Every structure is written in structure tokens, then in C-alpha cells.
Length: 193
Image 1: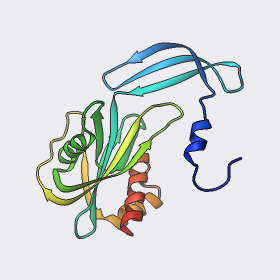
Image 2: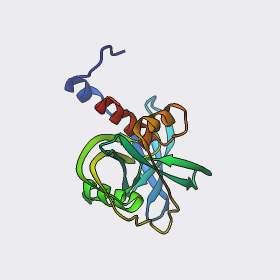
Image 3: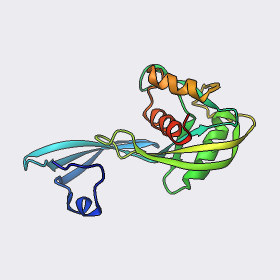
Image 4: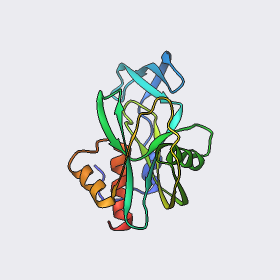
């Protein structure tokens, strides 16, 4: 057992990978993800299998915040969950492309907003037991309203509300998306809201 709050670089150096990959087999692929099945030796030394989902985009979440303390949420029906979801504006940034430029594009597409001030506030792994998906959250300020540019797969509702109400929606379980929850709570802490 390791006690204390922070680990030194020494501890990270000794934390070696106890897994051994024997073979990899691609099971499925589309323009957004691929799925592999790996034959592995698990940490106990026994043989096992592991499924791994690879993402071809980075997840990008944006929290727009105006001078009056308002933010924007985007509502849409999520096919994977079979339910409606309220989230911060977000989308994918192709691997190899600048994440800030992708975040700017997503904010404009989904809300019509253009921000002059941007700050990357978080890196997040959304479900690291099954996927390599890496997400980033940006705080966007000094906002100008423009026109939305929804993608053909998007049927979105846009909600402008006080930031404190967005936090209450997290606390009440009305917002369940991991990137949205993490990003909103981080901004609340950073801005003392």
C-alpha cells in the first residue's frame, strides 16, 4: 500500500506493465473506432483475453462561459444509451490535428459561439478499462454569438443557463456524461463558482 497524496517520479518508474500481449486480432473497424481482441497473460500469470476499443478521434469538450456567468449545454438523443442526454458542447478531433482548432470548430458547429479566450483545463480518459479514448476539456471565454453548423447526424437542442444551474444538474444526476461532469466541476473549482 502506498500512502500519501502525490507519487514521485520514482514510483511511476517502478510501476511496470504486468500484462503481456501474445496476439492481437482486429474484430471490427469503422471510420470512428476499431475493436481488437488480445490474447494476454494477465498479472497473475494466467492466460486470458482482453477486448480493446481504439478511437480515431480525441474527445473534445468545451465549456463556454460568458461575463454574466452563463454557460451552454447541448441536448441530443444518444443512440448508444437509448436516451436523451444533456452535455457540454463536444465532439471529436481527428488524431494528428490540433486539438484547440478542433475544439473551436466544435463550439461553433454546435452553439454558433466563437471565443477569443481559450484555456485547456483537463485531460481525461473516459473509460480506461476498455478504451484508449483520450479527451480534453477547454474553457472558452470572451464569446460572440454566431450561427450553428450542425452535422447531418446531429439534432441538437441548445440551452443557455447560469453556470451554477449546470452544476446543480450534475449534482442532481441530470447530466451523466463523464467529460461534461469532470469539466463542469473543474471549472467550478477553478472559478470558485
